[in-house]
Length: 362
Image: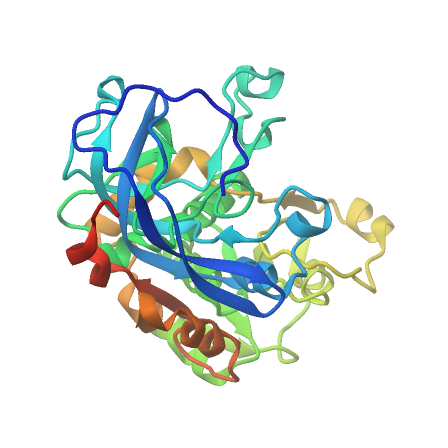
């Protein structure tokens, strides 16, 4: 099911063959179990047994057939999803430095390393980018996943598997505060109380002088206070021009205009949320005349090790954000739960450890 066409290498010790179980998106609104070939070894790759996989809005877009990756042809169904994940190494090309049993968090973006952008230090904008579980590389909703050795980050014992599944969304939060230059002197507003928004509140609490959460879900706002927000403010009760830094983490079409309204002259807006509809009410001249800096936050490819350290030390915590965990056999129920009208802890996980007794060659 991979989009790659690459030359096999001799199988490293312990690399299984045969077939494996996977969960695939086969069309709009259709999720099915499948038996697929175990990925063959390639030079520089590692075979990992995933243990936990996070489900997010991007996965829902793939599930509904509305994803831009499907629209522009980068992705196609059937697709093994799963770009937020952790697991244990099963086998590896010796040159990668990974060993069986190593605990790892998977990186989503896999740049080529050789294009002009990669060579210029802009790996996140690689011209030949592949993304695990989105396009170019199969995802982690399977018994095994094959990834390049450089696309893994080592997990310490202090970071349990459930926590490690949130490393991928958290790296984007770390990137947002690095690029916006957050400091103790900032008064920060975080728009949105989803996974990204709550992680942003936690991070800002460690850095900024004041942190407010802005949202529409009362339970989410209450959770934001538990995560460190000084105040939880419903949308519509905010004061314009009150913040030196606004982090837009909701992805709602109207949120970008709201962020520009909240930021003070000379302030910064970090845009993490991905709104796929035009934003009304934005006057470019106002942005220029007020000296506002707007930064689009794509991902945090360079921050995996630092983010894992933040979880290990307790600067970031995952448990308050996890709303439900489903076994591999209940993936359809997990997606339905994601779509249900619910509030509070936003993250949904798949627990794939039920497959551990069946890591076999068929």
